[in-house]
Image (cartoon, rainbow over all chains, first blue to last red; front, side):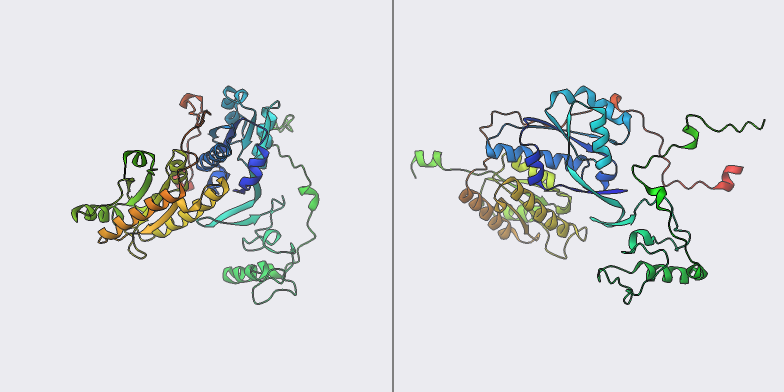
Length: 228
Length: 178
């Protein structure tokens, strides 16, 4: 899932300073799981903002709504009923959600409430760790299910480098050396022959931005395969 | 004390979230022991102090509580093993939120009150009331001409139908063949 982190309260309060009526829109998918922008976080932030404004004697109305996902059009539609009543919208979705919301409601100012961090996993309650950089050319079959593109500081495809230090990385002594992990895993799987294989240089052209993907079943002009 | 000073004296409202196994039982015991403690404390029984979340604590302050405390079991005595430890973390985190808002963090506290400690229950209730009295009224308590806002309820029929969930269901190829 996409892991995000709520922006500092100070930053959010500053963004909302010129407005009197604000709608906070949460997202019930990734950011809800990583406790940054789900229904509960929306309620907490709204309560905080209301109390902060009241304490300063400032007029601020903060309403809350959380949709299933902000990265799908159908879930943004119901907001059309309410959105005109507000001066600004604070979205607690990831960067994709914020932009999609802003695209759907072009004449409304949509502000981001979280910083999007990475694609990762939940290691322990409240702890998330990066696992994927979306390189668009997966090689996990060669590396025992451990991604060197994400977990090696140098993105090495043929590791380890000379900086591996008793299983730790020379760049950051707290972090594991991805290639030591890969070696141990392949050893366990009896597939050390994969270590001897030289990986060719990676094709970075497939990961140029902005990426777009159309499922073959939804292509405009699919190649005909009628068997004629 | 004459009537005027009695009327002008600030009486705080203190909310106490008490774990049913320890602190709430201690409150019962304090009553059985005929101990007198501040009537300002409003006790709310919770199944475990670990069920407390930041939102619940913040809402208490938003609704005008002058002080809030969570009372749980002694360390190592939690009926659910780690609920009280989680509650301590939640209270610490909520103190950060109070700091962001600009409220005094002393208005919120966590206490360990074992079930056998009736006198301690009374002591903590008096302590927190006295603290709230010294801090003065919660600035969010009243006098706001503004609408507070709140949750927008989405009518259920406005939601698009969700796809049937099939996560976590193992589909065996062999079974599908039959």
